[in-house]
Figure 1: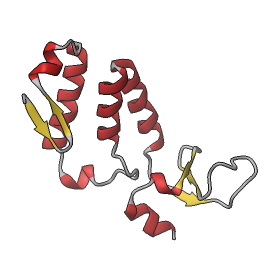
Figure 2 (figure 1 turned 45 degrees about the horizontal axis):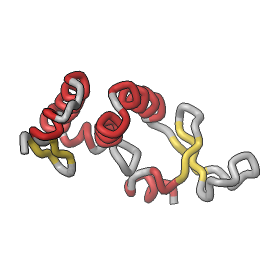
Figure 3 (figure 1 turned 60 degrees about the vertical axis):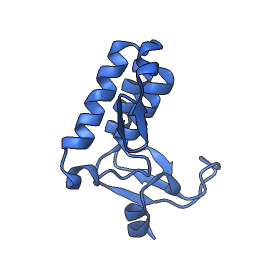
Figure 4 (figure 1 turned 90 degrees about the vertical axis):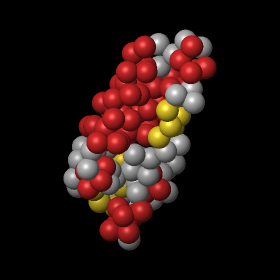
Length: 120
């Protein structure tokens, strides 16, 4: 194994198997952020799966473009401010809707335990 961080690992086989260098660089930058960034900064994420973890997962599964698009989407959504909404016919698939500061509506279960406790 080349390196391991949390639940993410990159082996020499995966690199030799053809992970493009740009993917490796992006994953390396994310791992560096997770290692260097203060815990207080990393714990501010409002989602169950943190932004760095979801971007790393999307990059590994679908490529650099998908990872960067996921990063842009999360960056847009991750702002202070959120509140519960009543169920609506406009979004019937969302049982416990929460509106984020950017206007997007997500399921309460997508948000971390700290945020869920604040909203209950």
